[in-house]
Structure formats: structure tokens, C-alpha cells
Amino acid sequence: MGFLDRFRGGSRQRMSRPTGGERTGSTTVRASGRVDEQHLRDFVTSRRGVEGFVEPRTAVSEVTLLLVAHDGEWTRRRVPSVKWAHDFANKHQVPSYDAAVVGIPQRMREYNSRMKAQRRTEG
Image (cartoon, rainbow, N blue to C red; front, top):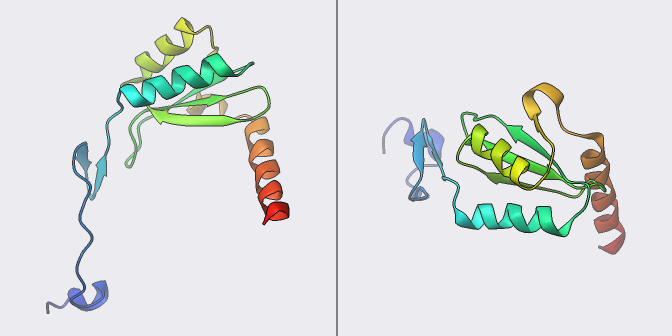
């Protein structure tokens, strides 16, 4: 057992790393795919008042597109690029914003609070 193994929990078996995607430091970043695009398309076409918030690449995630409906319901998926995200939004007549500039809408936070309270009363 090496010196640092003592801090990692001794001789425990390590978890395997996910395969595929790009390595960035100590994490693996999964690339976006057709399933992600289909999910975004389904969300946009099944809800009203949807706005898009393009989130920049970070150390642990690629560019993401956050879609928020009129009632605050939301979804987030990886996308190939910032340009792709804005083009997707334009194609589906969804206003899109740079999340790093405008932030996340309050209605999304309110939706999350409602869902949390609902889970508490149900459970």
C-alpha cells in the first residue's frame, strides 16, 4: 500500500472511469448526441413559452442548452457548440440568451421550490 492509498481508503478497489467522451483533467466529459438533440426538440415542441439559455463550457461540462418553459419547468442537455445552441433555438423560434450574461430565470428556481415542496408532502 502506497502512502497516498491510506487517504484513498486503503486497498479498496477503485471505481472505473466512464468510457467515451473527452478527458479534461480528472473528469471525462460526454459529448452531446442525437438523443440529446431529440430530447431538446421534444421539450420545445411540447411546452409553451420556452426560452433557451446557452451555458458556456466549464472544467466539468461541455456547452449546454438550458430550456425553460413558461411555468419554470426546465431541461438541460449538452450541445456541440454555442453556435449550434443559438441556431437550434432560432430554428425552433425560441429566444436564446447567454446564461453567463443574463443568468437563470427566477421562474426556474420557483419551479424547483414547488417540486421540492410537492415531494415533501407526497413522501
